[in-house]
Image (cartoon, rainbow, N blue to C red; front, side, top):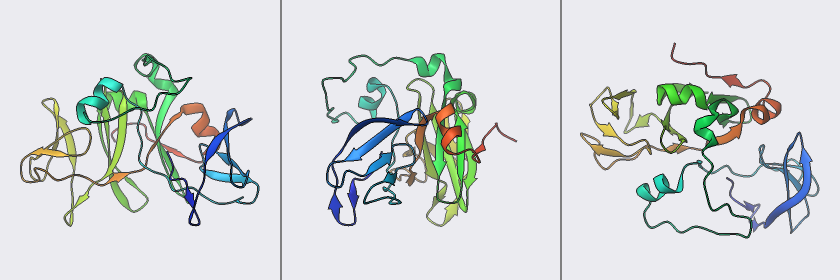
Length: 212
């Protein structure tokens, strides 16, 4: 998911009808530049080389999303699927949750996240935690820094807990009990992707293989 404002101008995107490395190519109506949906970068046209700002996003069941965000509205398009196909649970090896910057990239396979649920890691200079909800198949990444401290999270007794204070956190990065009650971790933009597509676009990506 990306912000569509570039150089002070709001762009309107559409499907170009083309593929690059078997992945969607977008086109903006204002300049007709072509964009890679996975890189978030313009590959051809007036805005070539421009990067879109990545926003936090996740893929999860509508039921699970409504439970966390009950006042959500949904955009229904002509081609919008009416049912969620739970192939994420059935074939987790097909998907990764990716973190990326100009310098590096890291992929967290869904099949590993399903097992661990909570992953403490570091991306470049930022300590991060990746939280995965098995039921909704939603994965999200957050900074582990909070109020000047770096927290370490564990999955215990059906909940996410930080070892430093014993506070209880949801899989969506908010604290619901303990010292940090009411606080929320800063979310880091992460991209759910097909495993093959991620490896194609980020061939030098680090792949998380499990707790060491």
